Length: 155
Image (tube, rainbow, N blue to C red; front, side, top):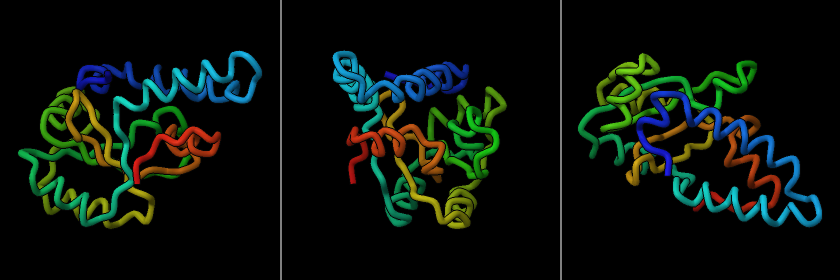
């Protein structure tokens, strides 16, 4: 399971890069089913959910602290559109300490998400929902898995 340390150290990026690489082989006979099973198993731990702004706002309001930073997948796809993610509680602290995010008020966090028209995805980190991403469907591992027939997003 990915934890706060995986995010703050950048380990999550290596895992996402590997997942993108493996997606190229999901339709390959023999190894494809194994790759699918492995990717879905790893992704399931994040319990990613596509959410609406009301749900995002509730998650933010219930948090102890919020931080904003560039969405994680953008570090892999620098040319993709710029959007931001909101990190809450322990993930906010870890990302701020790693200088990958900055603290914001709850109101500012909601305003930041509202400025994007991108689909919002809520993900678990360290077993708790702590990442709200204004995802970029072309550069998001979850959306790319869905395009390959791997249903990983709860709606």
